[in-house]
Each structure stands twice: as structure tokens, then as C-alpha cells.
Length: 233
Image 1 (cartoon, helix red, strand yellow):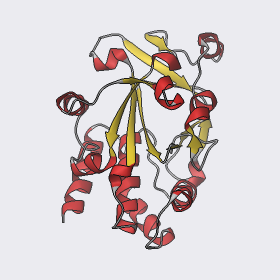
Image 2 (spheres, one colour):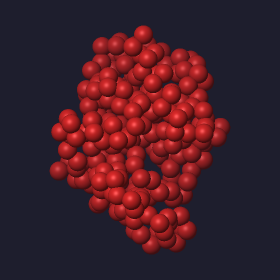
Image 3 (cartoon, rainbow, N blue to C red):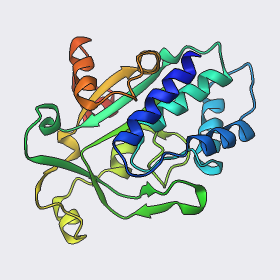
Image 4 (cartoon, rainbow, N blue to C red):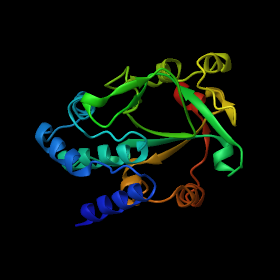
């Protein structure tokens, strides 16, 4: 019953902020068909599950990175009831402008980002700009459902280099630069680490960002530099 309430909360929140319907029914049917329950869990199992979710299912929702991470955690818990989701870290990437609610937008840019709601509709953006992003970390490995060049885990040390764009001129030459937004380099991107168990239990994928930022502040979750976090410093 608790899980159903959480899913309903996220669905309602998603529908309120988007004109597109989120394919929850289709996603559920697909998940149940490809993921079998087992009693053991480790890095190998995590990579296997992530690959299946990424490659075979209509699990992915373009523009719903926060909900995508939630459903990934929720399915892992369902398959491995004994697992401690606190071993997983939800990483929230954003900009100083967004945290301070400044009127001027600020964007960081990535390459080979995924678009599309199913395996038959997946495309890759050469370059695109974002104001925030959510990913998952487990055992020092990054799991990013939006990165088309990596359908399994990726080392923290290579994640930024492979996915993020540090050169302003690269974005400018690609004609993808939002001239109304401040360009944010990887060195300027901020990161907040949220315990996976608390992310699920507190339904953090189903609240608005003002409340989410308030949760970070009230729980003394400090902001870090993305580049320092990924380097292990």
C-alpha cells in the first residue's frame, strides 16, 4: 500500500508539470517481464539490472531524471527486499543560480544525452543544456539513464570527461547555446548527495523543487563541487 501511494504521488506530480503522460503502466509491465527476483546482490547484479532497464524497457522518461532514479531504486528494493538502499546515493546536480533562485538561468552542457521514451525511440543529442540532473551512485560507480554512450555503470573519474562539456566555444559552435542563460562549466556545477533510502521513503521524487531544496537545507545536506566529488576529494 505504501509503495502504491508513493507511485501515485510521483505520477500526479509528473502530470502537473508536463503535457506528456508518463508511461507508468507500460513501464511496470516491461519491468516485470525482464527482471527476475534473486536473493543476492552486488556490483555485477546492479550492472545487469541497470542494463536491462536501460536497453529493454519503456522505463525511461525523457525529462524525468528524478522520477527515473526513484523507479530504479524502487525496483531494486522490490527485487532484493533485504538490500539497504542507504548504500545507494542519489546525486542532484545543479547550479548556484538555481539554488539561490536567481532570475537569470544558468545551464551546464552535456553531449550524447538520451531522448525518447522507449528503445525504438531513443535518440542522442550531440549537445544539450540542462539546469539540473539526477543520477545514481553505487559502490563508486555512476548510473545515468540519460547517457547514451554508457548503458552500464561508469567510473566516477571518467564520467565528467566523457559526458560534460567544459569548453564554451564548443557549445557556441554547435548553435545549442542558450544566449539567455549563463554558461556553467563542470568546475562550477554543484552536487548534493542524498541517501537512497531517504530519497524513496520521503517521496523526494514527487515534491516540487522548492520543497526539495528545503529538505536539503533542513537536513544539512551540504553542497559540493561536482568535479571534487567525482575525483574523490
